[in-house]
Image 1 (cartoon, rainbow, N blue to C red):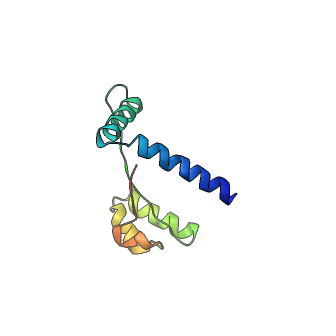
Image 2: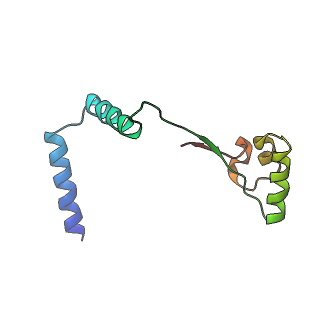
Image 3: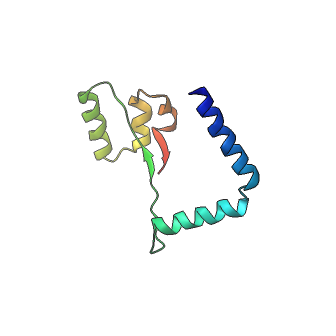
Length: 94
């Protein structure tokens, strides 16, 4: 298995040395992917947040606060159990 992995790494290194990837190649591939994701030019992105609590009762209470209009990040900062509590439960962009 070690020999096979070594040979695969060697082959990949040799190929990349003979066929370097340029910034233009990366940009072209990126543009192709964006085009394939959204033929009409509309691409949706979402900033995702979550709230992790200890029990269903805590989850229902947090949901009730949000439904009353309290900002999700404020609720997350007060009840969230995960490390991203400080960021209001922010997960990132998807």
